[in-house]
Amino acid sequence: MLHGSTPFLDEGYGAFASRSTVLGGSAVFEAANALLGKIREAASARLGCAAQQVELVDGYARALGGRSLAFGELAADGLCVTTAFGNDNRLTYTYGSAAAHVTVDPGTGDVELLDCLVVEDVGRIVNPLTVHGQAIGGMVQGLGGAFLEHLVYDASGQLLTGSLADYLIPTATDFPKIRAIALENHPSPSNPLGVKGAGEGAIIPMGGLMANAVANALASFGAMPNELPLSPARIWHIASAPNDPPGVLNDRCDRLGHCPNKTPQRSTSSQPLALSRHSSIVASRADRCCPVMVSAASRTALRSRGGTLRRPRTAGADRDRPSQP
Image (cartoon, rainbow, N blue to C red; front, side, top):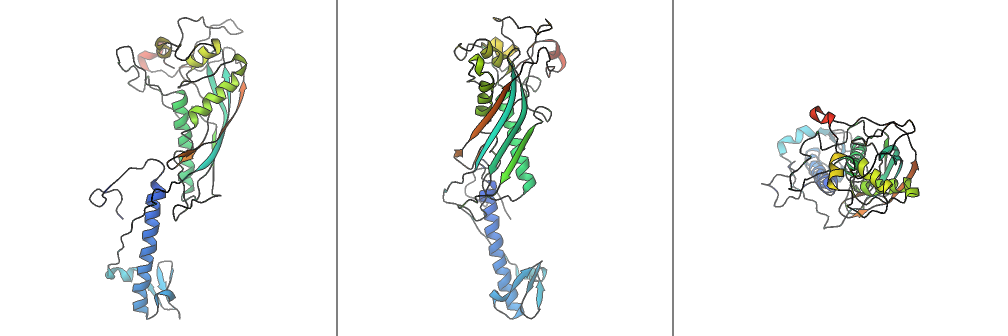
């Protein structure tokens, strides 16, 4: 089997848009069926029967009367097939929904993910473990983009988040309460396997779901987040000044994790509240194989946790200076 090799393919488009199993898997399926047909023909010539009378079971070609032939005995025949699969641009849609439950501390901008569930119909599951891993991994990647990952530049265009000490990526401990369910209720009609994409289903809607969940939690403040990432500094700012237009949280606020124009609130114990560098937060769902069908739901709750804060994830010299959201 030759896959993605430029000497044998005139055009190659990559593995984007959840197309690997839809196209590559279907090509393998069609080629395997064509090879089985050649095995039947070759076996029928040796067994003295019609190809339709040959049964292929457990590596053997069996004819009526109990006569059989191992597949290995046909190796000398040089059986080979060449098959291509094209779906003629018939798009494959994956359907799903997601729900998230979060808490938001308006005094610090900290968000905590209490529960997140993604459900999607992938048509047909070829490898359950892989599909589940794709869904969970997609959720974490989407959450990282919604809350942590941020390319920050100064006024001269210099990248300020050029290393993993400053550019935050999600880890296993950031989002421990996420769940995914894959269904096979509606196989795709556009390919012989009936499969749909499952790799992007939880990534695409994550930003919107997280913004909706945070907005719901801060509804009594009139806050409406409309920028990503949803850093603690940004969430604290919109909770403190919900009527400010987008972008009023200046570049210094974004880089340093606090706003120089605001006085930090104090907890009930009268201890100053620092803004944490990162926050563990919510989740959502969707999927596609080119276009996207998305349905998202969020359940949120508001809880003030006083002065209980997580330590910023900092390293080396960054430990003693304000961290980035």
